[in-house]
Picture 1: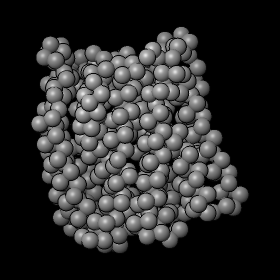
Picture 2: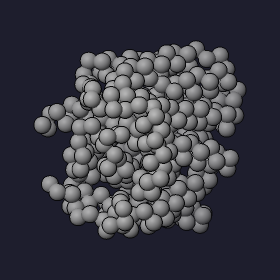
Picture 3: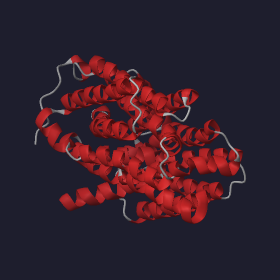
Picture 4: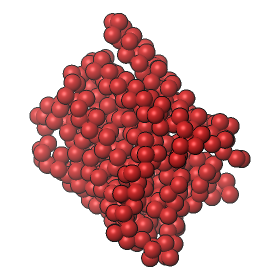
Length: 404
């Protein structure tokens, strides 16, 4: 059983990581892309927005499609499109073409974002789902550790265009894994009972489910804080603090390691205290830590070591928020797991992209706007948790800790 858990988590995690890999590996190259293509900071950031927004919106298509035709066919299409667009990005002659091809990449990447979550819900609920989701996050989180480091090395050896050739190779690996190692988890009878009209109806029910929407938005604003960090950290760390792209990649990886490390305590914490309690405490911790960092910086402390310490602790808490919010949101929606996963992913990433774009208006390459934006997201998530999680779904008190 343990081997099956790990094998499934490894495959799903690697497939899920293909899209984020195209973000994280890209980060150390943002300043050099701007210099190479003669683009401003805000224009280069648009190549992130143009990727993330289609990736989030396309989940609304891939989720119901995976309920109707099965989980694997949409994965094949999405990963293939992603790989071909990656080759196009490597050959892009200007920043406009790059932004357009990044959008095409995002359309393909949406499949890898939504379908693995639906597979988890197909296979398990309750503590087993939390365990598998946490293991998936462990594999998934290898991307923000290895991708910036490898990205900086690729930039040194082959320039920023080399990054997209590596991403195309990762897509080929993901396609191979999906075809040869991943079993179909959506049964034929379940596929026959699903349709586009039922998917639209399900979206309507989900949008009226205050518990689903509330928990989803808690995760969304947690992720939004990280999206702001994604868009701005390379300019802050490389240009403001003067680190090289390679050193920046290690700095970025340390925060990803915090996320991973905390997520590995998820299963035990949920068995001991329950999903609601863990999320409430994690959101409060995230808000307190990031708000404290903002206050410190407003008092005039502008030191990389101080920012690093606060961010490390803050992202430890975030590692407990995102997977638990996902499991809790999907827990009661097994028959429409693909559709529910699609709406969850779309709402979270659309909110994250919108927040990132708004934060970009105030970005100036310095740390204070970045930290201020993250703090606003953390406090918003805290406010939502106070409204949504003071009682369980349907208004009853939070359930007892999950059974072993």
